[in-house]
Image 1 (cartoon, rainbow, N blue to C red):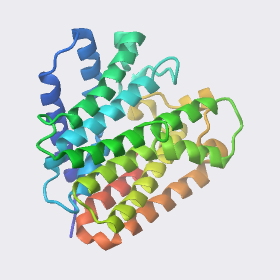
Image 2 (cartoon, rainbow, N blue to C red):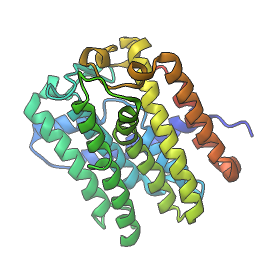
Image 3 (cartoon, one colour):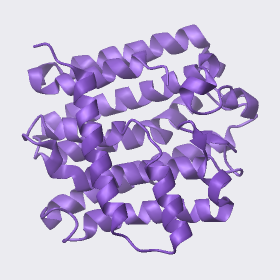
Length: 297
């Protein structure tokens, strides 16, 4: 099978963008708040997390479009985290996806509220019978539980807190792994698990896909750390060298660039091996893992 992962990604990115456009063309809010939410949500991005969700679902069911409400909710949560991450109180970034960050355009207060709005809108979307595409309540509850776990204090928020607490300090590799596992990998793992759960995956398959999500999520953050050192601001769409400026606890800072690249490659290899029993149905997940290792943006 000659699988074209880039074509796969392009089509599903289109699905997600069309669904998000539909959601945010019909909503009402104070106009500046609505515009700030839409600005960051529709400012580009690869839509990797919702596509991972659909790819996991498609191992067990045919059409990833079935779960677009859940995929859109995941992207809303991810975008909220970026808006808040860019704020002066956090990383103080001026660029995101090659565009001025939300707070640079709309001000700090409206950016905070835009992030809050996207986070709560995500949970409203999944929990609302009329907007969740007819999915039964038990399936929606399981998905909500995964999303909350990946985004909350035991996941992304907890990782971000430790990231901030570790700035300007000398920390060990275990602290860096703690940050990576929560700040980035937890939400990626949640995306994969949500897709598998919505596809009614058997327990052993869910366990395997959980390991895949954890491995690629950690590798994604390590590659991100490496790109901050070696990448180009124009290609990245955000300022390179920001981690060094803030003296962040990153893999390259603690283990060096060479070891960081080896660890990312090891994790991607591990993730691909986990997918073996799924055969051709896992080609999209395998292709995404390979692209994570190869990316330069």
